[in-house]
Image (cartoon, rainbow, N blue to C red):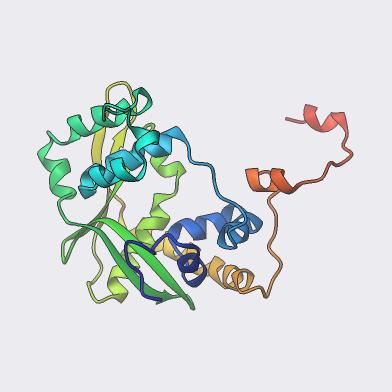
Length: 246
């Protein structure tokens, strides 16, 4: 399946390819990951995620397209951003004044690559790709500490390896991070090669099982605590003392 801007996020593409987000889904809950692949479950979109979408679209130069696609979600009748999303405008106004931030985000936008890795086809889509120079991914987060929480080292490991397997060599991976704090903070974080190496090794260990689960050769395990698991659960008889253990 050849990927493009129109079908990259399609159900067919998600069935055909692994991606960083799908890999993370399998790590969280195999049952949830398979339900998303089958089109039986869709993760709710939060206001926080939509703020990030607006900033992404500004860098892509596709805000006008978004205005046509989702006029009632983001914009008022007069064309202005809804109050809930004005933080995105504040973030954009701040970072576009910074030369270094804009320099790291000046590569080719949303470059799609596919490749074979660990016995499975993968897809990736880069926010900013500067051939022979670097890969940069834009992150709009609550604060810098959350960068480690979201395991962007896994993304960096896959993107670096994907570029290498496509003949671009081992490129440094950067996060162009900006926060949603009252006064946005922003910096460029390079994820060091030893951290990316460790993350890639971690993926290599887990992929054999995930490949078999996705292929229907193994039954997916339920985590029991995610929103998907709660949506399909049946009541259990439990003891009140369980609540006191924490």
